[in-house]
Image (cartoon, rainbow, N blue to C red; front, side, top):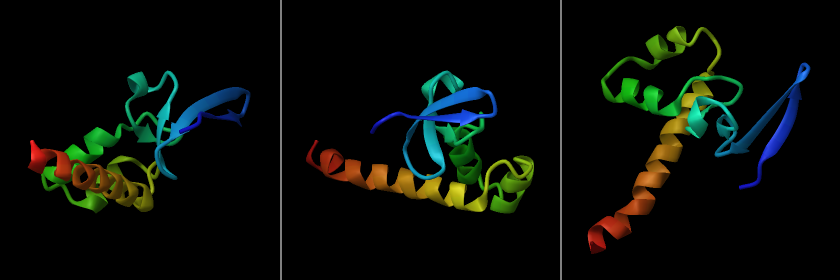
Length: 92
């Protein structure tokens, strides 16, 4: 995917979109996937969901910085990645 550069106030924000809300931003969290315009790592959100934390509690913890649709996109991307790896796992 191609890098996108946007102006945010007087700053530049460079990222590679992985979805509408999930990005890999240059210089943010070591390039690990985050929610766009935040330092909230996608992996942490998936871990919280996997541990059984309610979605509304996770959203409340992010204080409005991460919309519900972004978390839905995260689970969809993780599922696509997992299912895409299945043929390799089965043939291994």
